[in-house]
Structure formats: C-alpha cells, structure tokens
Image (cartoon, rainbow, N blue to C red; front, side, top):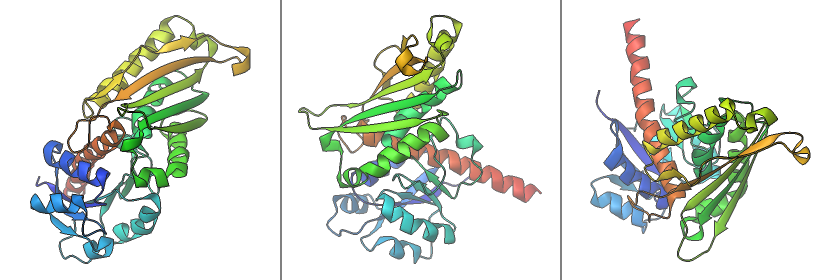
Length: 311
C-alpha cells in the first residue's frame, strides 16, 4: 500500500518534533503539509526547507486544498481542536489529536487501539497519559485498581505556551484516561513544572491502590511486576528512552487507605532528541505515540477497506 499523507496543524515544538518523528520513524505515513498561523514560525521554515508544503493561513487554508491529507495531527490547543474537529470529520480526514481536548476516544497505542471502532478522531490523552496509563492498565489487567494517582514532573523549559494554557484540561483528561483506558475505578493526575537547572528528565510517579492480598508477597505480586515490565517493554519499542527507575514497590494494607494495599511505580522518559532536547521526554513520548498510532491506524484503515471491497 502507498503511504498515507498527513498534515501537521501547529508549527511549534510539538508539531516540529512530530514532523521529524514521522520523517525518520514512520513506515506508513509521510508529511505533506505543515500548517501554522505565524509566518515567522521556525517550524514552518524548517518544513519548507525539507520540501513540505507550508502555510501560515491556518486550517481553513488546508481544507480548501484539492489534495486533502489522509491524516491531520492536531498540535495546537484543546480549544482549537474543539473548533477544528468537526471540519476534519466533514472533510473525511482522520484526526490524531495531541491536545487534551478529548473530542475523540482516549488512545494509548499499546493498550486499546485494537478495540477502537471509530477512528475518525482519536485523542492521544497527554504526555503523562502516554507515560502512565499503560502502567495502570498493566496493573488492572491482573487485579482491580481501586484508585490510581499519578504525578508528572517535567522541565519548565519543555513546557511551552500550549502546555501551560491547558493545565486544567491536562489534569482532567489524564485522570479520566486512568479510568477509561487504565481501568482504575478512580483516577487523579497532578503536573509539576519544575524550573530546576540543568533541566530534568520527565519523571512520573504512579500509585495504584489494590486489594490487601494482592499487595502482599506472593504469586499475584509477581504477576503484577511481570505485567508492568511487559508494558514498559512495549512502550520502549517506540520510545527508547522510557524506563522504570526502580522496581515496583508494594506496601501492605493500611486502615487509612480503606484496607487497601498499594503499588508504586517510578518512570523516567528521555527524549530521542529528534528536534527537542533529550530532557523534553514529555513532548517526545506523545509525538512518538502519535507516530505509532498513525502507522497502526493506516494498517487498520487499509484492512477495513480491503474487507469492504472483498464483500
């Protein structure tokens, strides 16, 4: 099958890093358009030098083209995607949303892509969602998770205007994804933007409240560890800098936890430095997840078309 074409909407750090990710790592997709609103954008200039068609006239310019892309990657803001999503759908373009708008279903490619039936608009949750939701899903695949709480710490220098403007959406979307995709009964997300110098790598702390007997030493605890290791290995397939900083730590039940035990998991994400510095693992993981999603969705779309033509 020929490669699918894509437009990146948003020419800032995330859009620029995504452009390089797709060019260097995608097997099924190629970037045809880079769209922004600032004619002086460094991202637009870089894209133009690479032979990509660019415009600073926004989404309406893109949708007026005769040759529309198969995919559009939304790298703007939650509010922008809420406005743009109906336009993409009306034009028959599959949208991969890297904002916390949550217009479409939440997606972590290692967890739930195969279960999605509507692929016209998928939401990549957040950077923390991509880093933590698969781990919570791994734990909940073995035992019920009563409550999941994650704390994402990122370097201040890797938090651009879009991230800072969407903090409320970030926490709400990530917390909900811990439930919908991760399988926790309740979820909570906290983000810390740390100004430390030199800039820190993205780090995520994950706590899952589980039944007392599951937290105690034994076979169930071993199965939880194995599931966590397997999830981390699958993520590393497209985010090589993803690693567990420590072995999962289990704590036995406490009365002030409602009789539940707890497992703690600590994750660090180093970026691949395709465009952004290595410390910007928070941006790297969501662009890498979006790239993997586009490749898998492309295969899913081709398979559906082949099945339809056979019938």
